[in-house]
Each structure stands twice: as C-alpha cells, then as structure tokens.
Length: 612
Image (cartoon, rainbow, N blue to C red):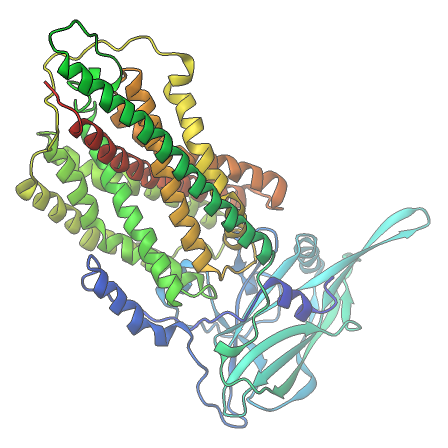
C-alpha cells in the first residue's frame, strides 16, 4: 500500500495544506461587527499564495516532523531519525499557530530550484550503523511517516515498508528503507507553485533486515515539473468528502428528530399546561370551597429559591456562556474560510484569542446571576469564574506537556510559547473577567420572579426511582447525543487522524441542532420535575443539559478501542486528557444553555397563574 505515496496522499488529504500563517489582531472581540471585520481582514491570509519565482530560483525544502501514522500526537523532529542532516542546523521562524500544531521546521540538504527538473540526483552517502538500522526498523514497524514543507506546502511520505513472506514454513519479515524520492511539482506558468506530491522509486531501497553489520546507503531524489491550468492553490481540485451522502442523511435525520421532538413537546406541554391553567383558574374561582392544590403550582413559593453553592453555580453559567461565544466565533471564522482546515494551527490560535477576549462574558454572566441571587462573596465568585475551566485545562495541559517532554516529542510546547499563552490569559483574559464581574455587580437588576419565595422551604415528597438525578441525566443526554454522533465520528477522524475536515457548514448546523434539542429536553424534564412537587430544578437543569458531555466521553472510549489504532502512553494520555477537557467544556456549555432555557420556561408558566 506504500508503493506510491501520491495515491495515499490523495485519499488521506483532500488538498495540500497551507502553512504560511499570519498573526491575527483583535481589539474588541465582544462586538460581533468587529469580529466580522477581523474575519474579513484575515481572508487574504487564509490561502496564502506562492511568491512569483523565476527559472532557477532556490525554493528551500524544510523537514518538519516524523512520527507513527496511527498516533497523530506522537510527533518528533525529522532528524531524530538517523537521516543525513546539514552540518549547521537552520530552523525556520514559526508563528504561534504552527508551534501549537507541533511544527518544527529545519532546513534540509534537498535543493529543488524552480522549474529545473532532474533525475536521481545524489543527496548523500553514508554508513548506517547497526543501531541506526534498528532505529529505522522500529520506525517502519510503527508506520512512521514524515512531513516536508516546500514553499509552505506540506509533502507527506513513508520512510520505508516491511514485507512478510512464508519461507520454509515460517514467516520471514524484511525491512526496506526507501532511498529514492520523487517530487512531482505543479506550477501555473506564472511563477507560482500550486501543488507538491511525493512518491518513491519502487526498485530503489535498502534492505536493512540484517543489523549485524554496517551498511552503506545512498539517498537520491528527482524533481518533475508540470504546468497546470489552475490559477492558484485555491483551485486545486478537492476530493469529495468521505461518505457525504451518509452525512447529509444524518443531518436530515437529526432535523426530522428536532422537528418531531419540538412538535411533540410543544403539543404535550401546551396541552398539559392549558389544562393546568384551566384547573388552577377554576380553583381560584372556587375560593370558598375546600380544594387541595397539587402539581407544579403547589411549589410556587419555593420554585425560585436560590440553589446551594451559589458561587459555583454562577461560575458554571458564566463559563458556559463564554464557551458558547467561543464556539460560535470559531465556527463563524471557519465558515468564512479564515480558520482553514488545512492549517489546524489557525483554529487553535483563533480559539485561544476568542476565548481570551470573551472572558468579559464570563465575568458579566456570572456576576449578573450572583447579584440576582444576592450573593456576598464576590472575590470567591470571580476567582471561581476564572479558574473553574482554566484550572483543569492548565493542569491537564501541563501534565501532557511534561509527558511530551519526557518523550522528546515536538508536540511539547517551548517555554517561550507557554509564556505567550500565559501572558494572553493573564493580561487579557483575567482583567476582562474582572471588568465583566464589576460591571454586573454595579448595574445588574434584581431577579424578577412572578412568585414570592417563602421563608421556610416545603418538604419534598418521596420521588420514584426514575425521577432521580442520575436517571434524568441519562434521558437528557441520550437524545442530543443521538443527533450528533455520526458527525462526531468525522470530527474525531480529523482531530485524531489524518482526514481533514472541510464541511464547517454541516458542523455549524449540527451544533445548532444540538443546542435546540438540549433546550427542549431540559425544559421537558424540568416540567416533569416540578409536576411531582420537586422544586430543586436549578442544579438539575444544569446537570440534565450538560449530561451530553458524559455521552461524548463514553463515545471517546468506544472510538479509542474500536475505531482508532492509537497506542502507547503518550498518545493515550493526549487523547483522553484533551478529550476529557472537551467533554468538560461540553458539560459547561450545554448545562448553561439548559438552565437559561429552563429559567425562561419556569418564569413563563408561573407568570400565567395567580400566586399568593
């Protein structure tokens, strides 16, 4: 399957990756018009074009990284393998997105002048020691592939292959190190490079099966130039996304599910509520008669009783709204083409900047709810709001970075990059969070409720087993997860594999469906909870809405065991560490959405009746 990398690359990657990043600036990202302006001004940098070269101009080829094909997080610098390297190390300057993506570009001995074809040019000749051949054998066993960068275009290839044959009744494995590289480069005739593909000469390899004696190896390479009718890299033909019909069918199925759910809940709840309103109105008319109240009206004096752990509760809501704004912002940029699927570093940088600049939303929402709940521990509330998500994220990222350092992996962030991230979070995120909290404290209005809260809480009757929080969380999380799980596979295959995600419009639609289903299922469960005279709906709505995060983590376990081929402590740590953070983020985001939709619903139904 490795006879020609060009066929593998065309199936694995839809188009060549664009590497020339730009630093994005943002002055007031809390305003959507300025966010749109940021996106529009960044559009010219989303697809950077090749400069105009002339015949014979030197176009450097950089070696970026190498690693196991099945472990996308376990990447190393190219020259950690015993390839022939330049005498002096020359590194290319990288922007923040490239560093976050694990890029570590170094100059190589390859020389590929513009529009100068040649065949079997010698790169280097040297002796492989037995230890070097053992290193190559181990790399071939793990399907190591490399990544070169040529004029900001990535070039992928495998370092070798192994062949197992049956000889005299037993399996014998031979290891072949590829020694002849072929670079197929297309240009548009106007001095611009459009696409680069790699393959190897099938008949040129070094047999490194025997590691008892040193072996001499000679690496050669060829350059083949062809002109294309395409004007720019933007017009490179993209392969059709995998299983596109299945994905659209999944979207259609999810939309039908949402419509049926919406219609069902709206019909049932409106009919039930109408009967309740009629019954309660009749009770009010028959004040002289002995009529015993029951149902959700009976708890009108307790339904707006503040929950326990107000500081933690408000911090969850503030972080959930901030994360919602971040996700919306990233999807907005992705749909415009700014955060291209070819440069994952761009998505990471956009998420970091949008998260930092939307910290004011966190402080304001948390402080606003805390003021409405008549809280007094403002410092504790602000600190919880800032650290309840960033704290676990920082601890997890620090642990995983130490793991990467222990493995000497290029995925480990340099000290300077860590300092930049900490400065962004300290000098931008924290002050905005504090400003949002102070603004909410000074300008928030009291919580407007249609019913007064009694001083003494009423006793909650015994509840059946299916009304308990755990069972309601299972019911609340299953339906939203069932609406997204098919698209979730393609997201996983992109983040933890080598498929590149391009259908951000579908992803945005799926996210919208997820929010709608979460709102409706949480509102329905809150109504059923109030109907059995259980008024502790504040935390329950957060847990019900956020329970989809637990289902996503369960899917992570299933994907890791049955879908992926990841192995090793480092890759396992990275997968479950970062996916745990993503699931925690989903819990905060969807839990906040579930609460605010439930709060709107509860206010509506109690405003429709007469409360004593």
